[in-house]
Length: 285
Image 1 (cartoon, rainbow, N blue to C red):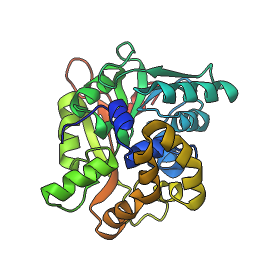
Image 2: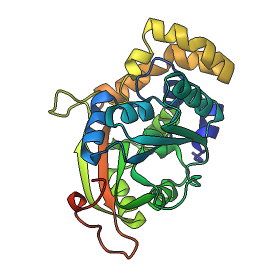
Image 3: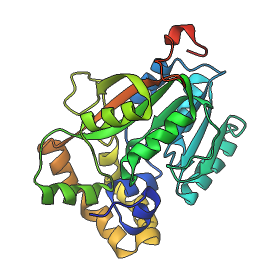
Image 4: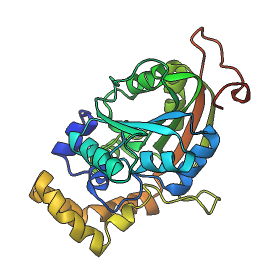
């Protein structure tokens, strides 16, 4: 299946990720509050820190990280409507002086080199035609010693090609194996890689189901709220997706256990190619 950019995919295909991003009920794009609290803690963000989250969608995750840490944040997203919603909400909540949202392709971010102390890539990164190029951009805009965090779906069990491609189409993203993400990060200039499992079967009770609140999205109330938005964006295909799409996804995600969710983090090496200094000796970490 030809891969599309995130914005193009959402406009053409009523995928699970597209529906999730369109919903106003989702607390977070695909993960959850406990996951982001962990990210804030690991990055040791302070009010002097600056962070970036892509794609930022409606900006809820960006606002949460800013409020939890006191840091200033930025979000980039290829969807102008999402950026407008995120900007308006930041203004309404009095956070516009600390948060900035930009419409931009993820492979060409509108920021100078070495600006951020933390860069987070959400699940929708996997919709990019060239995720490695996006990771290169994240490394470019992150300071030496800064943290890169990927929150991504990964394959847990093999599927035959036709079923895998069908699931990719329904999800709206293309999951990878953990080893693939690790390789892309190393090639982009990220060292000291660590992987944390947040899949449904993780032993930690605090962790959330794959795709976070996707099931809440498809409650009766969630469907009624989402139907008019899906109609405006996709017409009848969007309505059909809202009414029936979750059935097969639940089977594949919860019964067959083909996908999991992981957090992969590492530190940007210094610009001379050496591993960055111990974070405890560097500001702001």
